[in-house]
Image 1 (cartoon, rainbow, N blue to C red):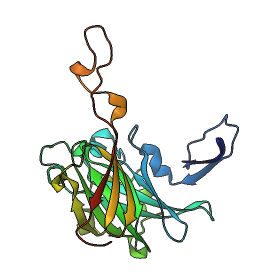
Image 2: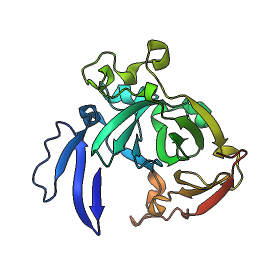
Image 3: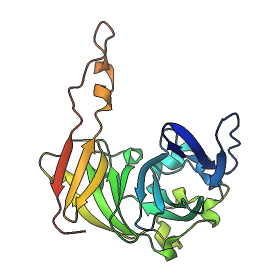
Image 4: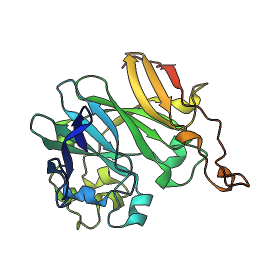
Length: 247
């Protein structure tokens, strides 16, 4: 994570123990060292600012603890609370995904679960987007003090089993964030796939933005016989959704 102004990096906040050198800006080892085990290209994906000024950052996927297989099979990821005033992480929370076939009935690969957006909705309440590339659901959580796991055994990368390996963390004493389903976007007509941005317009309205991956597709059909990229035809759009209840 870095803080910048007018294109200039003011500071970069990294996990403890990273040992990053050679920069022309300050590097602050302010994040838990356990984040060194993030899955490649699955770091912080969601960022929200709470009314008091604190930031909440969501890890897109579970950490690879103790290895990639454990991370791919896990349904437990983490949220961090960061104080810009203190320039420090002040809380860490365990967040539990629903089973992948609940989020997306067409999917059976747990590693496809991701968080791509978090939205502050007042107080310590947060909307969290659980998604695959085809489906998304929005959950409401409250960041209570009793759910803080910062500095405990789950920040020790040598803990066995790891937080990510627990089949039922709550049953084993981990204060997993309680959540309430606000809306299943798969039940709303006109919502495109791969929703990666969510914003609160008002208490009953959300704005959604999809990622079209620059028109790229996966697999053998991504390029034509001349090796040229085949445009998927998917456009990035803003879609407005009315919620069943105010949040």
